[in-house]
Image (cartoon, rainbow, N blue to C red; front, side, top):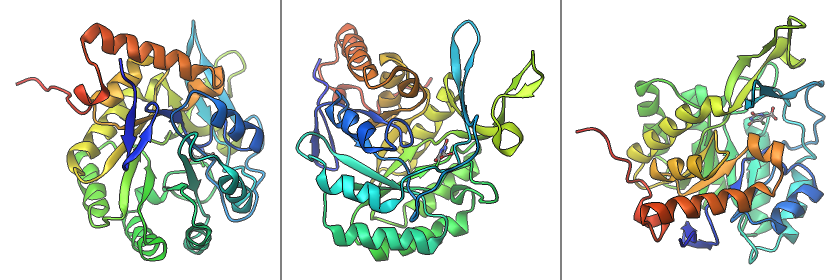
Length: 314
Ligand SMILES: O=C(O)c1[nH]c(=O)[nH]c(=O)c1Cl
């Protein structure tokens, strides 16, 4: 099977990349991703100034007879925008495309980062995070449609080139419709990454009768197996509603199977979060081999043979 693909006319060796926040917070991790088999990569969502984030424990996998997923309330710990811009300025774009994720604490911070990125004139692709669920006191822009509209208008006029957004999961058809209606009014929004973690879940340990993580009384973003059906729904909902935009799928990918399903649902690229956190960049060749085997079994030579071709029941 031929796993090559394209993203906004850029040729990629394959459709896999990391999810922002996982294995991408410091230079050594970014360099490991650059060396890995991933077709693309994204840096940790950054704020203008460095942040320590929330107190630990703030990330946990949820295990039974196997790992079902993860819960995190990192609180946007990052080295600050200038650090990731410095990495983006020395990244080898021939090796693979680099996305830079920003998640400013204010509209002004986002616009300051966008201006600096525009002036840097580098091929990094901007992913504006509208969906961090874990900064105490900050609600998600993705769930405030007026704030989302304003941010997209301001970033479009400030950046004046294609960019993308990282969306939270939506759970209601009216919300898919309203979010897509806003996105479709901004032609510079070239891609949409669905989904971020399912926010403010609560995982409890029965033996200690205690929450698994410390921040926010144990409320945190859910990832892994738990979120796959919601992730596929959001990928397909925006794939149907935003025909001019490219969809990046994220959520519940741990093998070739889930990567295939995201592509079938309409994703062009597929991000891996929880499973990458647990397995490390060695996950990429494994998932690629599994995806190729599935394609061979089904007689698909290229990703274009099946991408977006999800069938419904007549
Ligand atoms: O707590 C975090 O840092 C975090 N955690 C998430 O699950 N999604 C995000 O976008 C962010 Cl920014």
